[in-house]
Image 1 (tube, rainbow, N blue to C red):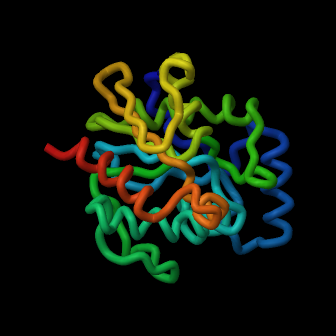
Image 2 (cartoon, one colour; image 1 turned 135 degrees about the vertical axis):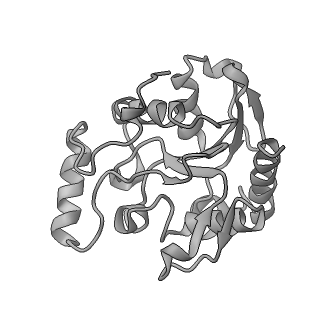
Length: 216
């Protein structure tokens, strides 16, 4: 991993990925009141758990400027964090300041919204410097929760680990270098929950295990 915490967050108008920049501009023209930028991480710099998602949703984080805030996946994620003690307050989309995270942080493998929610391999690679920097900048980090395979694979690439040695599976737990643990969950997307691939109970179980791993 990189060791330069100045790379933990991209500039809001990050210009690394031409396709994503163009898509941001199109959305800004259509919705000038939306965030429409590289979405920053949300949570405590004292986080022991880093939750890593795929990318901002068009009408979620790209609109609100907070990972998972305002989309279907967030409607499952944030209540689960409250239930497992990783957040406090209330999940009210009209009052974002009413909810805060407890010793955890949420980020994305790709910080800008991609068309059709599908970043390219090159975009994931370009954005990995910020994932690297984000992990390096959290001195108390003890565990990672990958929400979806893209997040899982990007984390492994940050550690230069082979995917075949750390296969993605819902509920899996992997020991990484430096004593870090990696927990895997299917993405809490509408598609996965509507098809029954992921239930609220399945998701809560993984989040609860990750939460327990960072508590003394």
